[in-house]
Length: 169
Image 1 (tube, helix red, strand yellow):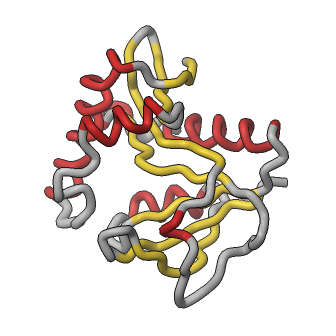
Image 2 (cartoon, one colour; image 1 turned 30 degrees about the horizontal axis):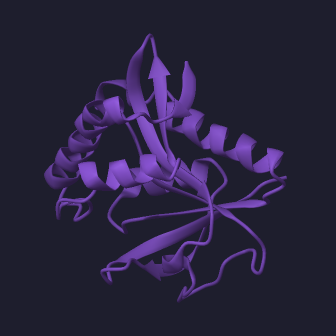
Image 3 (cartoon, helix red, strand yellow; image 1 turned 135 degrees about the vertical axis):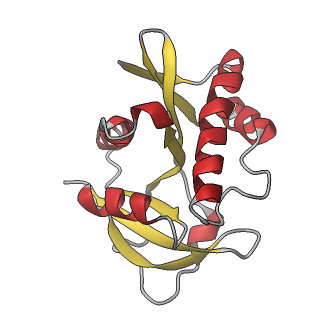
């Protein structure tokens, strides 16, 4: 397996995986990714900014994520809690998803571990991520991998999300 920057020719494979997740959310009554986002345009933007990554096995894309070392405007205000770190650079992970046929094989962890290693190489000490309050499987995944719930953030469109942060040792 390998992780590399996404290429434009990868968009169809990424959208296949994202659409699987959208269907999963809809079938489990999770109001996440039900408004057309993420879409091809958002993935193209991520590629343009070198912030989209794919997990590849046997020349097949089996996972993807947005990863960047940057301030996320949605993370500037947090309520019902606080970030563990403040006033220092951090990384963000968004839109992390794996092929539904391969769930349970720790593939999302491979993507997170890649982000952790990139952060450590750049002396970044924390990673932030958020998820929908009804996305219990993602919440369990994050807690299992030492992300701590920190409070509630609001997306640009006003939707609340549970914010998590992982401190890197």
